[in-house]
Image 1 (tube, rainbow, N blue to C red):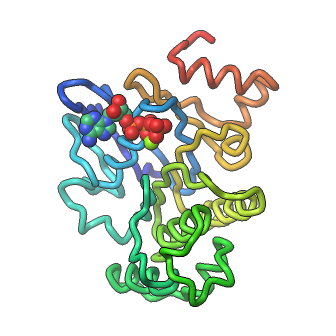
Image 2: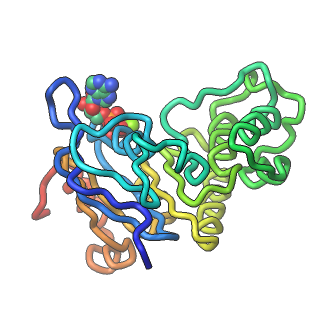
Length: 239
Ligand SMILES: Nc1ncnc2c1ncn2[C@@H]1O[C@H](COP(=O)(O)OP(=O)(O)OP(=O)(O)O)[C@@H](O)[C@H]1O
Ligand SMILES: [Mg+2]
């Protein structure tokens, strides 16, 4: 299978510091990759670069063969993004927010079905400004998937979700994967990452290490896997 995400020698500097340093990385269709790293490691920065929201300092990013910063219009419809605090039309409903997004994307979809998919039910008339944290989080996921993109970049998507919602979203991601959607998600909740993702990549000291399949890591490290990953996040390679 071809890589649908290709990253070649990517460097991102802020104020002269290399936050991401010479990263090369690929992802194939239908992979779910968990992006781990301590606070400030560069996860959000990495996802913003892949989404074309910020410009690389050096190197190349190819999403479906296109450069997200230079050719955003060519990939816009193919990616779903949920990064940091999502911005909504606060004085509209969830339905209306998705409706506007779909109009912008030029795509038609069953909005009620999408809201149900993320477990956002019984909020027909409620304005988004009256939503709880978890409700907004679900709406952000709904918006990211609504136009049926091939790739999802999700920054801490399960933040603030209750345990029922987490299971729901986990199943949703697995269904999307089966449909061939590629997902890169960041998370601090290791147990959830173990349940949801297929591959793990760790950002530490500006480098991105693809640790490969979680199933193999589980076999190798057993109940020490969490400790191993924490050491890797702290930059200790021979943990
Ligand atoms: N616009 C910016 N200008 C200057 N520095 C920035 C900017 N954005 C991010 N940084 C710096 O880049 C580094 C990585 O930040 P980033 O938000 O990507 O980390 P993160 O891994 O997402 O952390 P967290 O787990 O806390 O969300 C931090 O040192 C941060 O201060
Ligand atoms: Mg972040």
